[in-house]
Length: 93
Figure 1: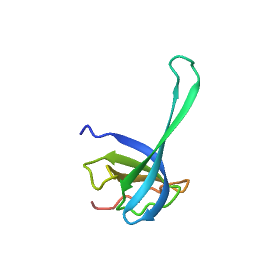
Figure 2: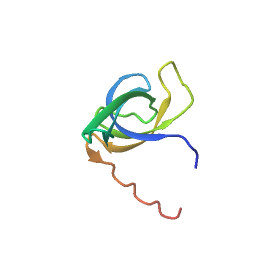
Figure 3: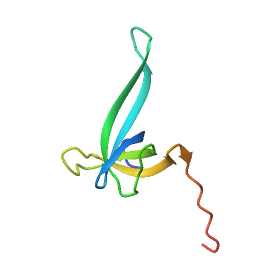
């Protein structure tokens, strides 16, 4: 297993060629005030899988691909709110 970071987020834009914008949110408790804080960040990720807006994806850290892209879409977890259908097991393989 390699040490690359993997984050889960939702695709918010796919208007660029082979690039998607992924919004990654995290929730944590403030250390002093004990209030729940919602933080989010937008990442540009390289997309060879053809993601659509609303898809939940897994992005993995990579080498710099362009000025802004440092992430690659590894897999699509859900298609626009729908869970990915399991592929049937190949017989004889």
